Length: 147
Image (tube, rainbow, N blue to C red; front, top):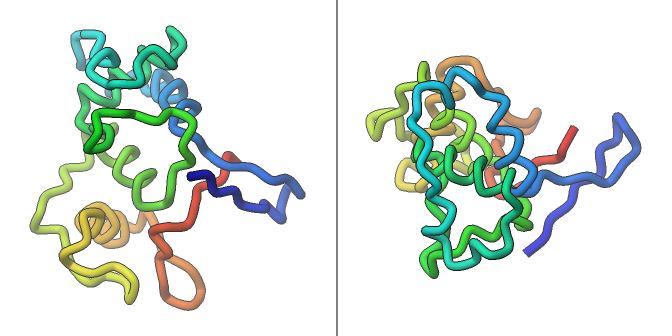
């Protein structure tokens, strides 16, 4: 599955892929320094597709609990990340964001309390991290652009 987003500010078609985000996470020294590095990328069935930097980023994200792959044990590094997934990765990568199941709720019309991403979206909204779209929705399935 591949989603793209036209970024009107920059006039480009861009999207965030899991492989790009996995590499960028290495720029989060606060989170990464608290971990003892164990290569966990080999836990994924598609590990042979990862470059060495991707393997490192994927391992850090896995250690943080920010990613866990899919039911078939794949990671799919070329897959585009949607808004709900991105928010989970960001919040789980930050040690100062203690998201819990108690944060789940109906904080947007398109975010239900029982959605897997509800606790991340509602935590972020309650802490002023996100605000949603002008129509009042969050659009969790929309892809995240690279800009």
